[in-house]
Image (cartoon, rainbow, N blue to C red; front, side):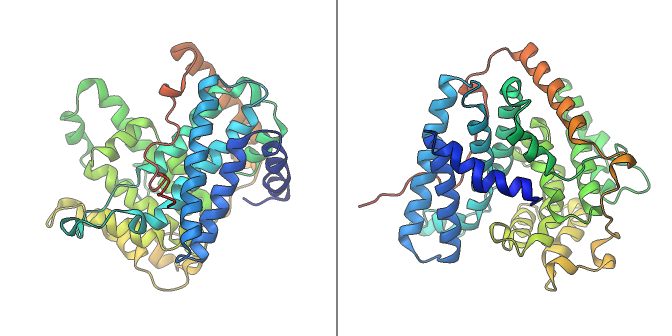
Length: 356
């Protein structure tokens, strides 16, 4: 949500922090700028090289700083850098075909690559917040970023009569019976939470609300995506379909069609999951105005967020939840090193190209 306060953060506070010697934050800003210019000028090889080089430099300096430790002095800058890295990781999917090595003819029909960078990067932000919370808890900068997010309150009954995506949980008991007992509860919870987020974002008038999914899903759900579980992939297809309303945002340009159809290609002909993919396919292939999809196509009348006294989590409530999460991580895991923080995962196209 582009509130005046959050705009000031990115236009004023971030450059100020970056110029105070936080080279990783400078490089992160330049990386995003280069990526945007590359999008506007896709044939500009200088911008292609610049986006790769600044991305690689950002990651190198960021990881070095994390290895040295998060402190009161660098916590804000590391948090903001993690946000920019997450943004860059998702936006870089625009160029995955251009960045792939297609010199081998046998690879000309390579299969779709899962968008794991979306999850790894957002999970990295979540972990950075938890591990640095003792310092950024009272940061005016961080509070503005949190305040700028839409109210987030889920209907925790994904099987209820109002659940549009409840069908994605059909026959879940059968899948759980085949699950290792140690993972059974986490798998169930991961699926349930993801469907709850889909239901919430689907009804929300505010299109960016769908972006809550990659930042809030459990690690177990990400593992299920990596394992290419059909249910996890169907949920993911519905998530990307929700982003159809943001086709006019440069870094999400045509993402719904590309990702949904890519995910669909992973399902075998005759799979029982095809009926669960009908809605995301219909939305992904919608050729009308992206922000004017009619209710009979979308499947529900979208609603504005209810007022704060109607139950939406306030910023202070969110802060309290993060407080609890940070304390739990501190008590169960102890101090974290870079090896235990999922900083970015498999960011596509971040290896710097040869500059000769």
